[in-house]
Image 1 (tube, one colour):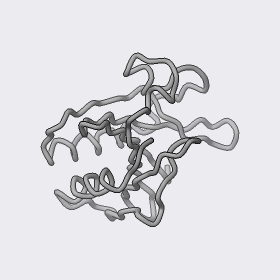
Image 2: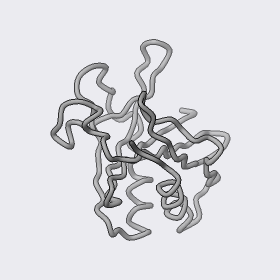
Image 3: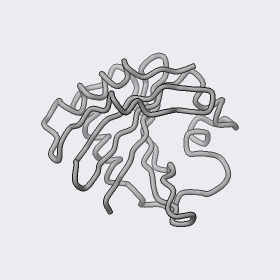
Image 4: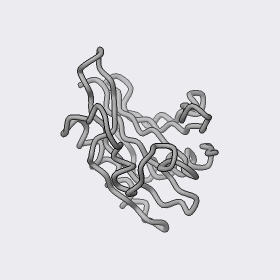
Length: 147
């Protein structure tokens, strides 16, 4: 696999919901969240966050994403409707690419959904140094916006 993705939702109290992703091979391949979800409540420890994020990255494509129905976030929160699930939340992309390594990208919330702020992407390299992932996540949380 040349690409992996984890999505991190952040509420107003800085609690995290971390969701692994998988690939739907139909339609040329669509990356979508899967039912592998972890929650980290604020305050959290640097090492603990890094372990959970890397563990969730290792769960890439371990389940087939559901093509229709509730998203993993909706299921986890017990709400119907993606707009309700993401209301008041920021979204952070944590990615791995075979030739580039790991990166964290903040997003801005628009009416149509979350849009990556590509010029704010934080490249972490092929091997992440201890503490680097945590500090990149905190920076991305600060740079991300929500409606």
